[in-house]
Length: 354
Image: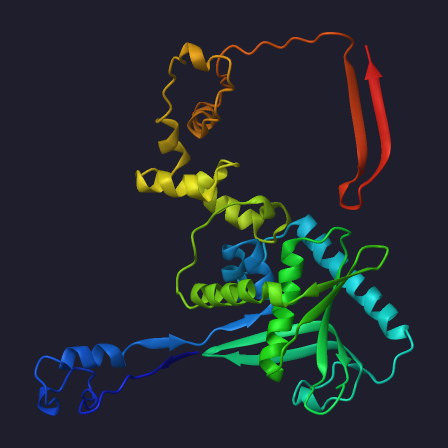
């Protein structure tokens, strides 16, 4: 909720009841407008959950839409990923809790974690205050290592379950957010985290110190993003294929003829085009100019032209740069490989020879 906070200066009283400066109250002429401007400045308290943090790692627009309560526009793959994640979480948590351990707790209270006696906790809801922002995380599991002596507090190790066999940097950052919220809530250092992933129940230990700085920067950027009343710039990216807002964002991008419709264009290239006043695919299509290549460059590969692709989209034609020559020497062989890249497992290989 937005809260107003005034900055007070010695000798400067508040503004009048109407909000306008009361010159009779101010001992220093000319400072009344400065005083009122500071008083009206508002600070917005932002709630940042692990769900919003995960969305921000994929796309800032996705984070903003989730925070604003935008209904999902479907997407079979997005629903499958969520269902698969929930199923893997439940299965691995049941397996972890079935192992012989002392003092196991399910959804324990998060108040006064320092006095906790459990060794393993599942589905621990943790909440912490950072400046004006509220951090919330639903930690899937937490391992508690008892104190080793006087003056040495108990250590908390957050655990996350990821169903994929290969881990990404985003998976480790999401675990680092759990550790960050735990650290803020307990006032102690959380130096280690674990990720259990894949069908083989692989366990990876992650040092949190290496990710603490980047995690804090992400939290600050999310707070800045969500404190604004307007959504961020819409940019389509590779994550769109597995996002629940794919239909909504693509429709908006087509309506505005956004440059991000051209896959492969980097953020720096878009920013450079924006500085030139080019914001749409149609505008970009009129900038392509075919040029004769110098002789010294004829043997080198032609660089990729986004403007030519925009022209092909506008004219609905296929354009070919130069005169490509396809020469096949020897016996052509065609390969077909099927498999699961996530597991580096390929179950079918076929080839055809002419």
